[in-house]
Length: 307
Image 1: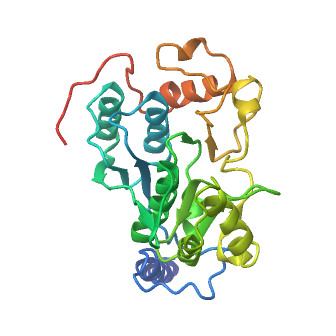
Image 2: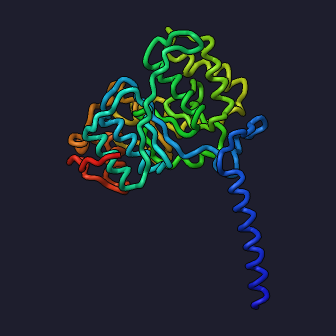
Image 3: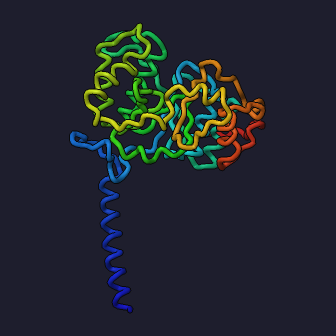
C-alpha cells in the first residue's frame, strides 16, 4: 500500500509541476504574442487577457448614479486586478465616488484615475465630437494595456473570465453592427490594429461608421476568426423594452447588459428612488447593490479616505 501511495504521489507531483510550468509560460500575456494562427473560436487554455477594467470619462467632473452602479457591478462581480478610470478632469469626491472607494477598500480592488486627454485628431483629421474621441480613446487604451473596456452604462452580471481566453471578443448581434460599449482584448489583438487603421478613412458626419459599421463590414465579415463573436449574452442589443417596460424578463443568462441610459424611457433614478421602481432594471440594480456581497449603506456618505 505504501509503495502504491508513493507511486501515486510521484505522478501527482509530475502533473503538478507540468501544469505549473505551462501556467507560468502561458498565463501572462507576452509582449511578442503572435496571433497569426490563433483560434478565436476555441481560445487559449489559459487566460491571455489581463483582468483589467477600463472606463473613459471625458469632460465630466463627477460620477453619477449610473456610473456608480456600473463600477459597483465590476468590483463585485468581475473583481478585476485593477479598475482604471481614464479621464481629463479631476473627479470630485462626491457621494458616489466615495462609495466606490469604500467598496474598493472592502474588496481590496485597486481603483486608479489616469489623466488622459481626449484625442483631437486621428491620422491628421479632426475628430468631430466627444463621442468619436471616446471611440478612438478606447481602441488606444486597449492597444496599450489590454483588458476589458466598458461604457459607464454597462452592467456586469456574471464574471467575464471565460472571455479572457481569446485574442479579442466582440459583442456582435446577428444582423447588426458590433457594439463598442464593451470590448475585451489582448493589447496585441489584430482586430484593434485593423480597426484603428480604418480611421484613415474617417467619416465625421456618420455617428457609427468608424466605430461600428466599418469594423463589422470591412474586418469581421471578411476575417471572421480575427475575433470571438458573442451575439447576445453581452447585452449590447436594444433591451429598452426588457429593462424599462417589463418586470418579468429573465436576465440570468446574460454576462453584461447595456442600459441605454441616455435613451427614453430609461428613468433617472438614484439610491433613494430605486426601491419604488418595479421594472426589470430596478430588480437588477437592487440585486447588485443589496444582495451581492459586500454591501454598503449607500444612503450615507462613507468616511473620506486618501488614495
